[in-house]
Length: 301
Image 1 (cartoon, rainbow, N blue to C red):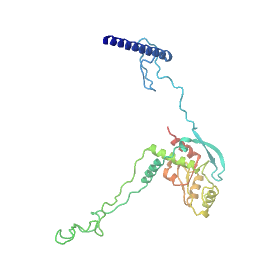
Image 2: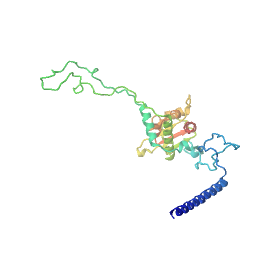
Image 3: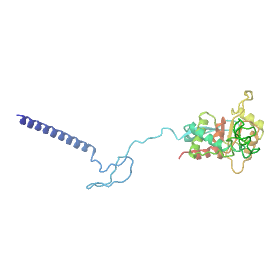
Image 4: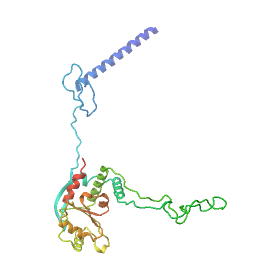
């Protein structure tokens, strides 16, 4: 009786396995008919390496299939900025400036590194203190080693005595540090973007003036809204950034003479622009040539 029950159970299990195999075969056939034959060799997505086909196949294997959807930057490549007249601050035209230069992400950490790098380059490093071999005094032993009840001393040149040497004092050295060029360029883009975002970037056609009068220059800067009124008792804070060639034009000579006696106004060649000097002034006034130079240098690859 038990053997008959065992045989019936085996027969029922074999029927279930046969039905499952038939179902899997039917599903595989339907999938193959819908998607086509699978590739003979799978490759990483994006690879362009040609793969030999298996025997019996012809043509070139194209896998993965081409993607129809591509990511597109929704923001335009340029932004708009006014170009004004330097003497009257009247709008002249609208310029298209690079978004990657004047609307870049403001990285305060990179700006801090660039400012530290530039200020370290300007440190003289001429500080010095005298060591034991440089101060005046005898090298004989001050008192006997034992028996006096006082501390043990060997020379009057020791740091604990008046007129003695300086212990671990400063010595002449260089304070220069290193900074990657791409980090410095990113910091300069951040500073220019901050000036543009705060409406403190002024683009003019040229910075040449006819007169070298300091009074006329101060009056013009106040009328244009770039310098505070005398009643506020606040100094001006303006950075002039023209592009200077081998020979300085007479108009730029007049500008340099006019701003020489005005506190808080600086002038620097656009080729020598510094992150710290631009950052410490409120307004940045540059001409069209300096704008083209900075866009050519700071445009990311």
